[in-house]
Length: 430
Ligand SMILES: *Cc1c(COP(=O)(O)O)cnc(C)c1O
Image 1 (tube, helix red, strand yellow):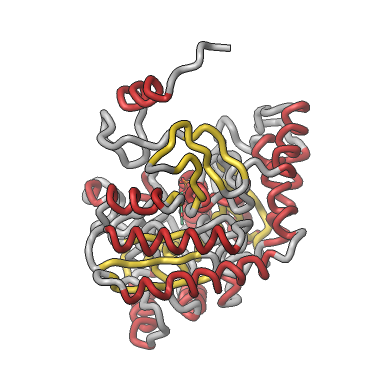
Image 2 (cartoon, rainbow, N blue to C red):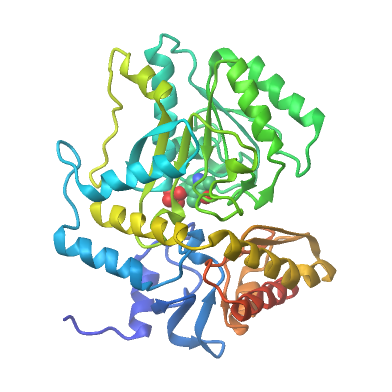
């Protein structure tokens, strides 16, 4: 074993050498040092504001739905580790990946049938875009290579995903001009609006000749602004895409696996996409893995082309360790009454966040499934908001004008009440 490093040494090395998400180099804020995690709690190496444990209100960016150090998921990882943690996927296959793919086909809407296992959400979106563009190329319509999305979205940090993130005020504004130019509809209103539905239809029809696909996050726009919209828009998109020969991609990386109250958010509208991306909660937050599913029509289109293969193959494609944990996580989810748990969290969030609506500086409070959002009328003072939450014993990671929580589904009522108190405290402090 190497010499243990003190927390102070670790933090010094971190600051000097380690990039953090969306961070400057060297770091300007001190991250909290986590020693271990169990259930819904993160254990800190050193107490912060009097707390040595924090309830995780973020599920590690919406992924750890079953909480940390879960015996079933640990066992799945250990069992697989004893067999093999990885083998290449070119020319070889293995049970964890096959089982996972079959399971994903089974639980996602018809007629999704084929699965590409990717190593992160952003890559699964890249693959989705590649599938769509290649489909149209293969069937002799190479001009169809642009994407349409609505404003306020987020689809990841690699190149194609960045081009369909909200172009204004988002994390990737810097890259306007360098990114592929996509077609943007206005952001979807929360409630169904005929005029907006017509706007979507018109825009798709007008650009049909150059559009490969429409890509959206169904029902909840996550990192682009934590906005909710009427599921009826998904039917509008489906109809307009069908009428205009445009493929429809749903990015359910944030919404998949029950977060909005249905297993997949598209079920709120009873609409199936041609291509679906899942990630985040896929492995219960244990390991990085995502998947892109497509219909036979899309796959057959690709296979008919001059280059009849999907030219994508990450080194760690289908990683057995991640696939085994993903299978266990899905079984764990479906083996319980998860709808009841998500409903319970939804009521707890509604009740606990109601008082936030009365706070000065709060513009909106909204809850859907196990997602609770407090939107301010100004940008969050991150340091003050984080401090206020930590004082309540809760980990939150606000952004822009938003303080929100997506707790693990295993969060008990008392812990949930602490999370909502912390959201309110952070909203008051920010
Ligand atoms: C997080 C997220 C992504 C990107 O996934 P990564 O695993 O971070 O690359 C893409 N789309 C949506 C909707 C997301 O929430």
